[in-house]
Image (cartoon, rainbow, N blue to C red; front, side):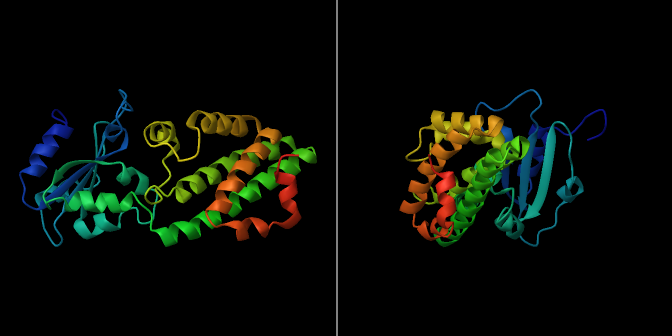
Length: 249
């Protein structure tokens, strides 16, 4: 391929599929999320090579254009990708273009889509504490007349809240939190049990935008109930009397 003939997604897939060293092709990003593609969407493609394999495709390492973004890696590297890391959600919702391992690529992706139960319980406690901390700071700053600080803390609380809610989702096991871009897409297709998706999104919007204290307190009460049912009472009880400031008045 040259400047007159840039490498296209279809051309590369055909080229990669013709080589026996390629054991998997995985498409991530907006192209893997139905209805999310725009005129600006490129093709984010993982090219998975057999461990120890050499290939002429190595010349495309780091290839990135408005049309095609390639990540070329070994099977072992692919297993480790996003575990943990920011790529985990992208891979959890990725689309398989080629799987020469009789479902092995699909199995690897399925593993990335579900958090280990013990890991999830530990992380949920950490996210819960971070969420409570942000709510407490926001409400206290609002009380003391620090409006900007209150709004910023409120916005922070929503990030921690979403991490928490996806981590305590037990259907059948916790899952990675989606990127903000895909939050509505994810909840429309895979709603969180016990939560009204429209209400949750509207509340997150209101808190992030305005830091409304009464809304934060009502939401905190719902989260507290969920967290206690999930076995995280100790995290909440450690806040002692400060919980009173976060709860509805």
